[in-house]
Amino acid sequence: MKILHTIADVRDELKKARTAHKTIGFVPTMGYLHQGHLSLMERARQENDVVVISIFVNPTQFGQGEDLDSYPRDFERDSQLAETVGVDLLFAPPAQEMYPEGYTTYVEAEGSITGLLCGRSRPGHFKGVTTIVSKLFNIVMPDRAYFGQKDAQQVAVIQQMVRDLDFDIDIIPCPIIREEDGLALSSRNTYLTPQGRKEAVVLSQSLFRAKEMIESGEEDASKIRAFIIENIRSAKEADIDYIEIVNARTLQKIEKVQGDVLIALAVKIGKTRLIDNIRMEV
Amino acid sequence: MKILHTIADVRDELKKARTAHKTIGFVPTMGYLHQGHLSLMERARQENDVVVISIFVNPTQFGQGEDLDSYPRDFERDSQLAETVGVDLLFAPPAQEMYPEGYTTYVEAEGSITGLLCGRSRPGHFKGVTTIVSKLFNIVMPDRAYFGQKDAQQVAVIQQMVRDLDFDIDIIPCPIIREEDGLALSSRNTYLTPQGRKEAVVLSQSLFRAKEMIESGEEDASKIRAFIIENIRSAKEADIDYIEIVNARTLQKIEKVQGDVLIALAVKIGKTRLIDNIRMEV
Image 1 (tube, helix red, strand yellow):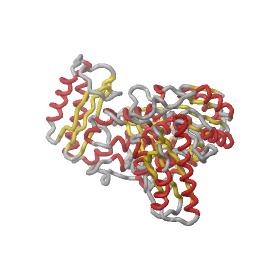
Image 2 (cartoon, each protein chain N blue to C red):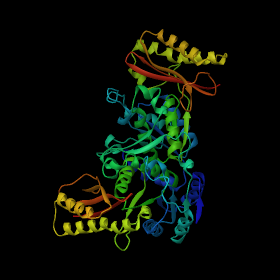
Image 3 (cartoon, each protein chain N blue to C red):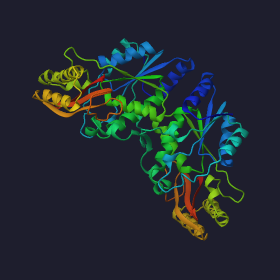
Image 4 (cartoon, one colour):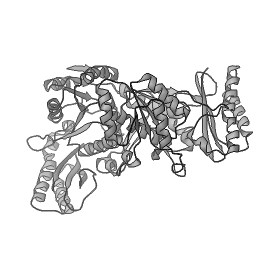
């Protein structure tokens, strides 16, 4: 596995692959890799000749007072894990390689797709995401890019951006990977206290029960939402940011549970903000 | 020359060229082609295996009350002219192909590079330009793209965007083409009345005289600017929007005329807003 730190080196390396008509699969990450990330890389490994990943804690997607500085990092471990699953090229640029002095261009999906859910609590977050992903797409020029469905809104926003800006790239959403007790894997789980870790299971459990309700015929979104809220409030350290039942593509709220449905939530457990969701065709 | 109207058809056509390792030169236009546009295509013809042009009057770069609806169009003549200079592929999409329902993503170079000069009189204009050019770049994926230096700010903004978003495309600015009396070619010249057409020559004449002043040793930007203002005011129908002396790359105003200098102006002659500029290394 090659580890490269500059855009020019990545271009040079991938030019060879492209000239030889090899397909390129790409997994952008912020590092501190867990089995969720690795599942994306394994899928990319199966479907492409060359697998590229990036590790970059992108400052423009963090708001003021958010956890940019404390975001967990372990490059040694990350690069070993990436090599294990057959990654060919790891791109790990310093911040000034991506945002040099005088940087001023941003890509933004406007409107409710970025304004609701996490976008409401984290203004500017998705603008940072679409900007860095555009840059990485232009550097790597992959055939396919893999994103975890855990960040459901991120997937929807990137699909919107790819459609709108005519990127010739297939976006492949991949299933959420969970701990045995159901907690969705996240680099931020490392922030949880032992007590918080126990209580965090209430998120996925609520979603699974909501799914059962829907499968048993419940169609009223407000009833399902009320049930989830009640459930999560039973956890002492839980502080709800949002719980919404929406169309999975447009992220617009729905009243009747039908079609491509996404139940998404963000909850603080102590000081740690966690997100989770479940998507189902009803 | 092929004329194509859909993104999918352009992709298919260019995939063949790319697979055969042919280089692609691209000239985006809003049509109503004149010798300025054709000079870009001729340059692209010399430097690339395949020459692609687009004709698209881009609605997102026109403000409210601007001339979107009346912007001159003559597709028959345009396609004949393009064929004459050896264009291989003309992409002429309908508006809904570029901005389908639910469209929401924009690319914007923020700050003074888009906020000054034409950006001050035409808020949102350059956001429309960077958005459509990003889309066209992603569709055509050229090796080189050609822009007229007549739109000097547009060139600077696109170069900024290409640097920031890491497009792997060479931006080639090409010299202004002028009528015999000095008037810079523009599709909007067609709006001029006979009297306005006569008076419009004051723009280029002022710039040429300013250049002579600088070549004779004048370094004080405010003196040169005052001279141009006085000159242009001598034309009865002239109404100055701006006249600025700036650094050609950053578009920041300069007091002392040195380095990569751009003198740029926008002036209404009657109801027609014209721009012109001169760039010089001092």
